[in-house]
Structures are given as C-alpha cells and as structure tokens.
Picture 1 (spheres, helix red, strand yellow):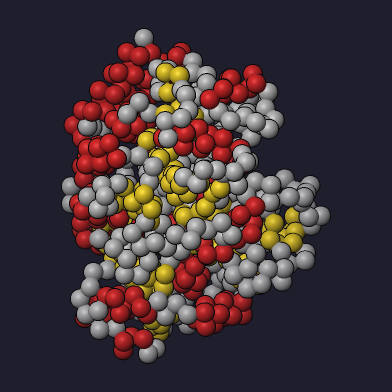
Picture 2 (picture 1 turned 180 degrees about the vertical axis):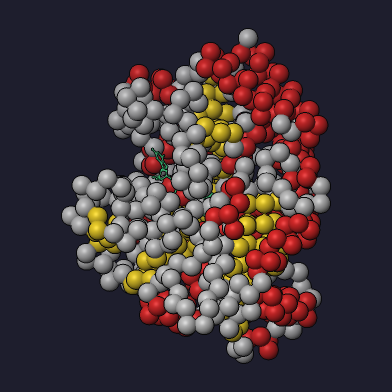
Length: 597
Ligand code: GTP
Ligand code: SPV
Ligand code: MN
C-alpha cells in the first residue's frame, strides 16, 4: 500500500476499499494521486509489458490494441437495477439487485489475483464546484487509470474535499482476468462477452462493472456516473444530466449564444463541439463534446457544465478538412486505441488522409490499401486533454456553467428528416426529443445502420424509467417558463438516391446554427409545416455555399406521406411506456397526426 491511503480520513471509503480488496484479492493496492509522475510510470510499465506502443511521431502518445472482442460499449450487458423492474422501464435491461449482486460477487471473487488494485479519486466537474460530483473508481487496469487521468480530474485534492464523511459515488471495475502465479499477461486482458456486466444501482448511487476494459464500460466517470447514475440523481434533485455537447457561438455583433446538442453515439457531437464556422464573423468556442450537466441558476436560466476533462473521440473520419481542432488537440499527450500504426510510428485511420502504403492494423496484422478490412476499428478512439483544444473556451471550467439558449436534438437519418426544423414550443420540443431516431453505429457492439428510436440520445444512458425521464423534461420546462432554451432538430446525414451525403456538414453546419441564433434573436424567418418551423432557403445564409439550389430545397422539404409512414412506429414506441408515458406526449402525437391530415 502506498502513502496516500494514510491520507484518506474517510472511514466509509477506507472500509469499502478494504472489503473490495478482500473480495478481489489483488497483489497490491495503489491510491492514485493524478500526478504526471504516476501517469508516466504506468505508461512505462505498460510499454515494458507490451500492452502499449509509444508513438515516435507524437510526443508522449501511446497506442493500445484491445482484444478483438472488447471494442465498444455493450448495451446488451448493461443493467439498470432497482428492486422493481418498472423503475428501470421498458428501454433498459433489468435484474433484481440481490440477483445481480450475487452473480457479480462470484465474478469479483479473486478476480484481481496477480494484479494491482488502483484507487482513483476523481471529480466530475471542477473540484469542489457547485454542480460537481466526486467518484472513486477501483480498477485493476492501468490503462483505465491513465485514461481517467485525462478524462476526469484525478487528484489527492478530491480526498481533501471529501474529508471524513463527504459524499462520493463508488465505481467498482475489474477487467475480469485474474493471473495465476507465473501466468504471462496478455496485452489487453478482459472477460468473455457473456461474463461482462456493466451494472448500475441508482438507488444506492453505485456502479459495478466487470469484464471489459473499453471506453464507457470501464472509464466509469463517463457514461456510468455522469449519465446513468447522474440522470437518476438529477431527477431526484431537480437538474439534468444529458448526452450533449456544449458550444459557444459569438455573432459578428458580439452576442454570445450557448448551444447544447444531443446526438446519439458517433453522430457528430465532437465534430459540432469543435466547429470552425464557414460564415464570416462568427466565432465558435468548445465547452464540452459529450456530456452536459444542467441546473437552473439564480436568474432562472438553465446553466450547463461539462463534467469531463478530456475528449474520448471517434478517430475514423477525423481529419484536418473535417475537424482540424480535434487534429490539433491530439498532437501530444494522448492515448489512441484500436487505430492503425504506420511504419514511421504514427497513428492512421480511415478518413484521416492519404492511406499509408503499409501499416499494422488494429488487430496487429499487416495492412495495405488493398486489404479488405479497415486498418482502424470503426470505433477506434483518441483520449485527449480538453485543455489542448485550441478553441477551448476560457469559460469551459466555470464552476457554475454557461447559460443555455438552444437545445438541438438529432440523429443519423438517410431519408425523411430535413436538415433542420424548430419546435413549435417546449412541449413540442420534448416530443421531438422523445421520438428522435437514428441509425445505429459502431459505438455499441451490435448491428450497424439499423434505425431505432433513441430518445434524447439517451436510450443507452438513462438510469431510470424513460417515461419518467420524459416527464422530468416537462417539469424542467415548466420551471424555466419563458427562460427555457429554444429547441431544434437537425439531420446532417440525409443521403441522395446514389447514397451520397446531400449536405456538406462539418464547418458548413454553422449556416444552420446561425439560423437558430437568429431565430432566438427574432431576426430570421421560418415557414410553418406539419412537423415544425423550417427555414425557407432564403432564411439561411448560403453565401459562398457550393450547393445546388435544388439539393438545398430538397433538404428543407417536408413530405407529409413520409411522416405519416413514421406514425405507426412512433405509436408503438410510446405504447411501450404504458401509464408512465406523460399524457402531454400523447397529446403531441395526436396534434402531429392532425397537422399531417
Ligand atoms: P460519441 O463520442 O460516440 O458520442 O460520438 P459523437 O456524437 O461525438 O460523434 P463524432 O463527432 O465523433 O462523429 C462521428 C462520425 O460522424 C465521424 O466519423 C464524423 O466524421 C462523422 N460526422 C460528424 N459530423 C458530421 C457531419 O456534419 N456530416 C457528416 N457527413 N459526417 C459527420
Ligand atoms: C458513446 O458511445 O457515446 C461514447 C463512447 O461517447 S463511450 O465512452 O465508449 O461510451
Ligand atoms: Mn458519447
């Protein structure tokens, strides 16, 4: 045991660590201090063991290859556990806490044999901030420790803030791969899929994760704490925990607009958070790229913080011409996972730029442009400190957050959904969020490209009955009244019959954002349609946009027949919630039907 444990004065925390150590049987225990020395030492050990490769082309950067079975979140193995199944609701996997804990206790028994148990004190949000929360992650993965250093605020200061009896969220994690005496470790230890459990006990603010070392399954501050547990806390305490980017746009006149956007995994949050506007005079600053915690401030407006400290971003598709700010953020001090490694010791992925003549792919095999499989896994990721982003806002760590003007919902839809539309009012906006649909992506293990309802981009992340979550949105709107943000819906992913994206996206999305800001300012026009208010082509700034006017018109057209065809699926989606569906949503669906005629 190292010295920091002596510094922990929190009897309950010490007792929990002792119990977990007795259960898991690690060879030793290390209390993390979050220092650079600690990070450097762990990376050095992982280089020596062959778990990672330093990248000569990027200072202080390391590349990891996961086990081919452990490449993304596992929604089928993710559980929301309450004594009553109805509290988890129809969209979550449920198991009774007694049964789930008994199963997992068996798995945890001696699961850390031959490994070090790390205790990570971390803060989501600035340490000690009014919206911040403290977590303690126990893990046997040094890869997780290093990622948590970047993604959260890991520090002995967290233990100081906690004092003798402060509140923390216990986050238990093991890769589930004990080592017998003399057994050689593998580069990426994990358990088989059927033994993986990503479990949440929201009534106890408790997380138990077993069997995976990847992303949201293992970096427990992110989806498990900051979304699933936090969403349940937020409902109890009257705030919101959302799967949203946070962006500040400043108009040429100097007016600031704060925008949050909820898109499902791998549907464009990081890219929009780092937008480089193509329209002159508009400036963007990044505040967060994945999660927002929002609370009503003393002036009655809604304030948002980014609880994270880093970006865990999708690598494929990231390039200087699509997201230069991300490229600038990942030049040093980053962790890369499941990319390809080039012969000159750099990372590469599909969509980054010209392919190298040869590389070693994410599965550690030779790769050339003639290969039939991708060089990087589609869910390959970079872990980068947010402070390294050149456009990070000077206010990104403001403990009280920034006041939100605009909520955007959206998803990946090849057809039907126009480029942008505005909700008629708050209730209609909640309806748009609740019926959001998107094609599935590689961010979850499972089929890709299947259309599914993903309400508020929270389908995999809501820690309680989603029907009650819808109701919580209505209640927040009632409290906000005329100070509520305006709500919009976007789709950057409409495709032509030839299968090409019709909208150029990325920096050109600033044209859509400008229209939204001007709607807030009461300056831009819109046309009423059955689904909401759409810009007429002349309401959008298209100066310098290289897009065929017919394509723009098509992107801004609503076809009632297409929307009528959506209705049965919306009805079936709502029916799943039974009497937990807020009547205000049923009313919105009725009104949509009437408007469609
Ligand atoms: P998570 O980290 O999984 O929550 O994903 P995300 O929502 O942050 O998605 P991200 O911004 O990483 O984008 C995912 C993929 O969509 C990348 O391959 C991007 O290049 C692509 N993408 C993002 N924005 C656009 C856009 O405006 N147009 C098009 N065509 N593709 C986009
Ligand atoms: C997502 O899937 O929405 C992510 C990546 O942001 S992970 O952290 O793995 O959940
Ligand atoms: Mn995400």
